[in-house]
Length: 168
Image 1 (tube, rainbow, N blue to C red):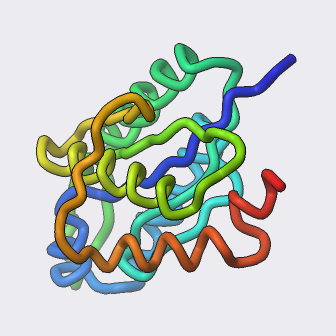
Image 2 (cartoon, one colour):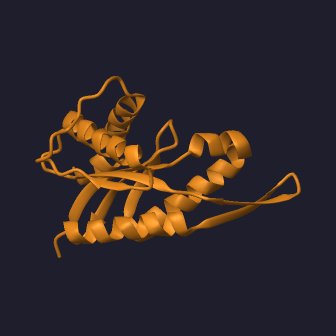
C-alpha cells in the first residue's frame, strides 16, 4: 500500500519553564516519553531532537486523513498523561500539552521551502498551544523574522540518518 509522508515538529508547551523548575534529567525523561509516544502513534521515525528540545521526524501513514486522526490521538494522549514524580521528597503531578506542526512531504524535496513551511506550521500551532497544524503547500506561509529553529532544521535535514536522507 502507498504511504503518505509528512515532516513533523513537536514542542512541549511550557517546557523551558518545566526544565528550569525540575532539571534537565527529568526533562530528558519527559522527552523520551513523548518520543516513544510519537514513534508509537505517528510512526515518527527517526526522531531527532533539535538544540531547542523540539522533536523532529518523518511520519509515515496511509493517508492525509489518517495523519489528521493520528496527530489528534497523539495530542490527546500527551495532554491526558499525568506525570508523577518526586522532587526533594515531594510528590509532583504535572500535565503537558504539545504543539505540533506538520507539512506533507512533496517530491522532489526542496529543503529550504520544507523548513520554511514546517516552521510556519509549528509557529501557528504554538500560538494556540495544545494544537496540531497541518500546513498544506497551497496555504500561504509566513516569512517571519530570524528563528534559530530554521537553521537547526536545515542542519538536521542535511545530516545523515535523518528523515530527508531516508527518503532519497
